[in-house]
Image 1 (cartoon, rainbow, N blue to C red):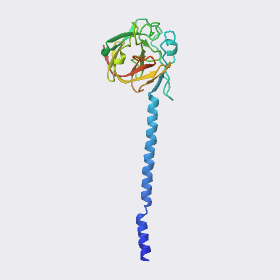
Image 2: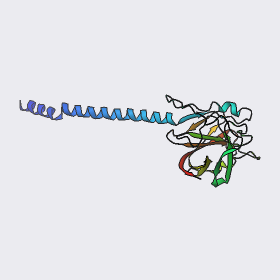
Image 3: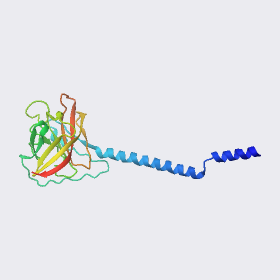
Image 4: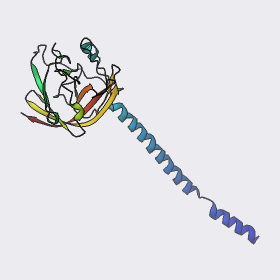
Length: 225
């Protein structure tokens, strides 16, 4: 009898109480919920950075393909961009300046016939001008040799380098936050933060005919000229 009682007591000591089981279950449930929520948030962040653009560098095709530039984040309404005026000029409306590579080149209205990589740095149709909050100003240019290789020295840029856009009496300062390459397939994926106002520069990769390089820069400061 004494031995049975001792064994029962030992069993009771080893048995986990219901309250402990309940607390443990609650902790596991909360932990599981946290990881599910975390994975969902990470997935949405990936969507927010996946911004597709179609750019083709042949002069006869560039404008046609560029009209398909913007594909918004899944589930996000595309904002209609309204032009300020139906009239425009073929003269420069702003300048891109990158001190590190001594680049200072004007750009024209994206509707102008002079807005062509065979003539200038090209403002891609569908991108937004620098004064649009959280917009993306996209410029393409040639690399290589010849007078039209305006972006030939972009390969010297690094994360943190500055680029400036002067437009409508204001100076927009950007800092490069990402540089990456993609194959030349007629399309490029532009990975940017939708919560930031950005500048994107696109050109052929230095000494590589099979890829193009994309430079993402985020707005750091705006000041009057």
